[in-house]
Image 1 (tube, rainbow, N blue to C red):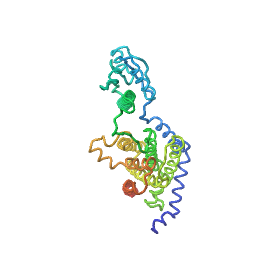
Image 2: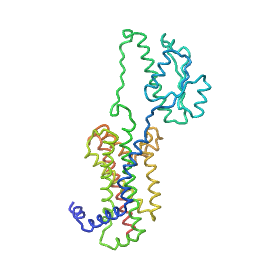
Image 3: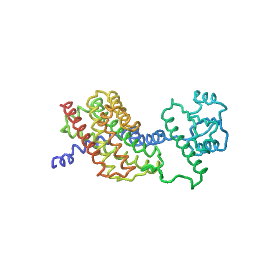
Image 4: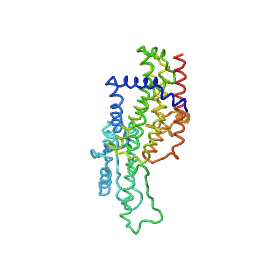
Amino acid sequence: MNGILSLFRSTRLRQLIRKEWLQMFRDPRLTRVIFVSPIVQLLVFGYAVNTDIRHTSTILLDRDRTQASRGLADALTASGYFRIIRQAADPRELTRALDGGEVVMGMEIPVGFARDLTTGRGAQVQIIVDGTRSNTANVARGYAERIVQQYGAGRAAALAGVDAVPAGLDFRARIWYNPDLASRVYNVPAVAGVIILLMSLLLTSLAVVRERELGTLEQLMVTPLTPLEMILGKTIPVAAIGLIDLTLITGVALFWFDIPMRGSFPLLLFASLLYILTGLGLGLLISTVSNTQQEAFMTMFLVFLPAMLLSGFMFPISSMPKVVQWATLLNPIRWFLDVVRGIFLKGAGWNTLWPELLVLAAMATLFLGLAAGRFRKRVG
């Protein structure tokens, strides 16, 4: 413990940290990348990464032309999820609209729809979606099916009378943590995790390589600085910037996107520090195996893109092949997304998130240790 304290009291380490701060803020463009770019990215991702559907273009073929069929069409548009752009005269017109990409969904109400509702024989409605837009089609189909079922149940209850509704079954769906099922509430905290890792990798993967290209690495090597002091001097400023970026991103999420935060902010800071240290260790490891900034930059993206895709941020891990699911256990983004979503949406605490925090701590120790070993070999 005394050795660690004396290390942080070292004048050499303080001067190296000061040199890193001055070097980062000397370039105004780098300053904008550090502080402005994360906010811009969060705003862009917050609005763009959205699986909600609104006003989906729809063509309707109403072959029944009754009050009941018109009521179903009204229920469809009143939901806000669908917009009927026109009425089809025959099935061929509906098919042409889907084939031409004019609409995402088509609905056909058959003859006898109102009669079947009245007699209780089970009215049928055909929903056709454009499968080339698979995500939108799946979400739109789910919304449309729910609207049709609710409309049919409501009509049946109204026609039968309140006293005729069978008792004994009271089905009520309740959605926890995100009652409106707004994808932004689920995605924005995850975007924060992706951006923080990107910044950590970007700033540290170029650190040692930039010193080597500028010729200052040799100057640092002949100073009394130890390899551990050089590693700390490279990581401490970036870790501080990562925490500042986290605070800015959290503020935008809370006050701009109105994302609820039900958990502890100090716990979020602690988890983010472990996560940032993991990213710094990985970035420094990339920096020690690269000879040029261009090579380090390409290697960084070669690591970052698969990590983002296999984190559960865009695609559910449960739908991936088993081998890939096991591989995601080595992905720090996966663990941090569980932490940040748990803190924001569920109000999860230490007693719930300790396994994820333990994994992040182990990853930070592993990557920083490997980077320090590689760096010691390169210096030696």
